Length: 385
Image 1 (tube, helix red, strand yellow):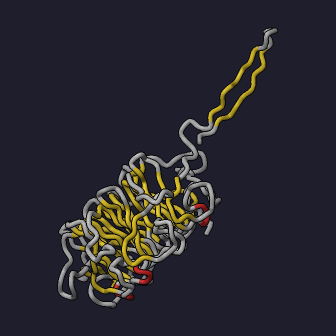
Image 2 (cartoon, helix red, strand yellow):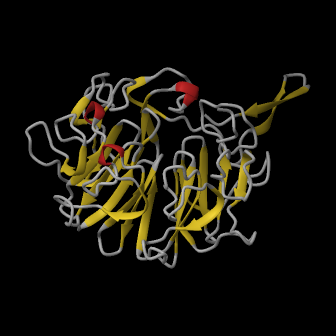
Image 3 (cartoon, helix red, strand yellow):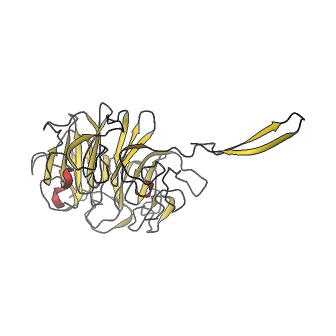
């Protein structure tokens, strides 16, 4: 979908990174503190607490009160037409977006057919609406939010989580398969219990996962291809523990990220594990075999990729940032999403190319003087590689 989702002022695909512009080609969006990519749009939080979104806007997911696509970032506005302020975190979902404000409440906008905006409605909105409780008041104490495709999950300051939206296969984690356009509590062992000690929650397409205080993880919802990581392919409406091949809980998890059909976790030793669908090599283990328990992301030498500081599972591919500030991606490479300058998929991590750098390209003049004192010169343009 050519909707300008790269934010560079064009609708041209690129297999190498391009700069996100401010108001048009030749400018650069600066002051960005956080960024999130959805299905066909992306959003950023700026240092002044406002937000910008760009790309496909068919459901109003850019939050600028229109449904017009934009290849450059537009300001997320309120119903009064002013910039939404106090934004501290943003999450771009399938065809909607959610943000946490500095008062601990949340706003969502865009598609709402499954109640994923959390405002007790099924009506889409091109401007932010408040996530509310069953009492009609704003859900408070939110410290992080994750927008999936048809559901949303939020982590609260009391270390519990709330989810809302479509609940097929039990993807809200409340022990039922009943949909809800208002937040419901993620349970521990069944209805009436509460999963606590949560340090991170992530809403995928048809499943969700949480990291808990003991550095293990729980997942729930659709378990096709083993994406819940419990060694089975059985759907779960209550959280189950992500296990190793030996049947013990995978521990040492510091971050988790989910795609449509696979999950990945970064460990305290700076390596990563992935599980679920592997048709495009998105698990990074050098194969295309589905896995119902976590496998290590490996290098071309077959050793575990290490030095990882951040991981993100996306549309049938995965990317990681390394401690040396470079990035690696693996899996499906349609439209050049691995950033290595090709469109060839890879079941092992490949390096994201760094094309473009401040001050480049640079033009220098090379002059040569012969034995007779005659000088000849030529301008040479150098590009950053």
